Length: 467
Image (tube, rainbow, N blue to C red):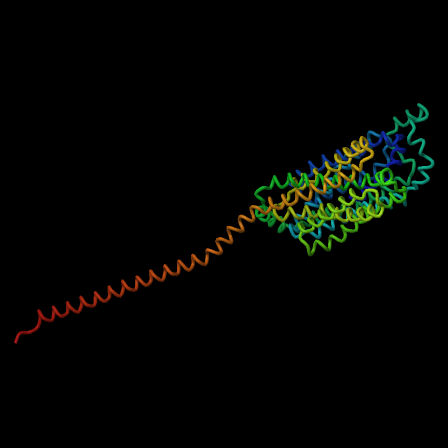
């Protein structure tokens, strides 16, 4: 999934040339993909609660693979945008399905597996530009096709030919091979969920409802809404810094383009590396502890970025720490909430939608505000504000999630403390009752014995022979 999402960036110019459009007019494909991602999250959350998870995941992978094969053959921008919407919808179902399956299989003990899932996403996103660079000669295409990419068609005949042609071979077959490689990989992976679908275990399905009924927080909906906001600001800040750090470094900090590119690379490099390390940390640390450490690192690094925004050394160090701190937050948040309440398909889709909205809204707003105030580091202020918000919000989430448990724990402790006293009181009462019964029984026996002796004396006196 990381490869599928990241492959669009380095091949975007070739796609624009393939449909005879300039880059600015084809930027709607990002809007189409984001819209499809949101719609897929809404639909996928409902489907995962009523359709077999393995079957739905396999179909989504297969649909995404078909979309990857077809994208290079579209010759009309409208068809490409529509295909990107379908592509984004199927990709969002794949993303939700991975999280839901891990929670269903391992539950609140699946933190290392959740970290491994999100590390694989980061690894795919890291490999996609390298793959595109190997498959597509970007330097040659940029030199030979820069002007046609930004200019309208030269003649009406070519325009009519392009309007009549809906599908066709791409102008550069390297574009096809880049998408075909990722699509083939996706197609092969789709066989595994189908195999698991035909070998599903009924024992796991029988044991799942009882576990779901047992883990149900009293403020379930409130927790999901707050987690929606948490992921909204976290993912928004992550995407904002990753998207604008290059332009910030060149225009505001005065870095060379090569240095700014390195700054961008070190952010995503430390992000992916720490997601890999988080797999091992999650085996010995609780998800809540990892979230707290991530919040502290994000808050400290973003504060240093604001205070020393023009120091190259501080930018390098703080950017590295910021990327490392952002790495484990999302998977740790999913694993953390599963400890207190069961996450269904709808619940997972809800906070995934929050993350997607943050990814769309915050960078767009920051781009507008930065244009209005070019002399201020708006990007850094946004990262610091988001770090403060998430650092304050998580203790509220934790208190709200553990409040019913604390009350129940206090009640159980009170019962345990009073259990011994109650047992002693009941033992004393039982002893007193037994003692009273023994006294009554003794008195009764003694009285009965005296009466029987007196009766025998009376009988012997009345019936004795006379002399």
